[in-house]
Image 1 (tube, rainbow, N blue to C red):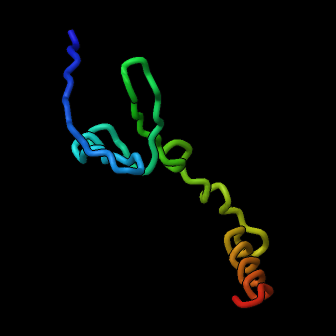
Image 2: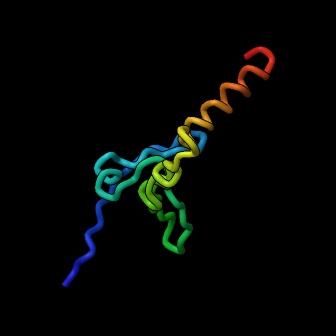
Length: 90
């Protein structure tokens, strides 16, 4: 039989409404850069959001096809260099 164990932490809230989730809880529940905030009748619930790489995998491997002797990434780098040369003050 599973029992729910409540662990209480007291945190400060800044004038901007920011609070720090204790490190122990961030690590235990996998919080990284973003979280979903849910208003419930009992209070506020934070749920960690996976990064796009964790949820969908890196798309970089999807673009490893070659066009002639040049990869898509090489073409994008070349285009970026051309754009930078065309922009004044860059």
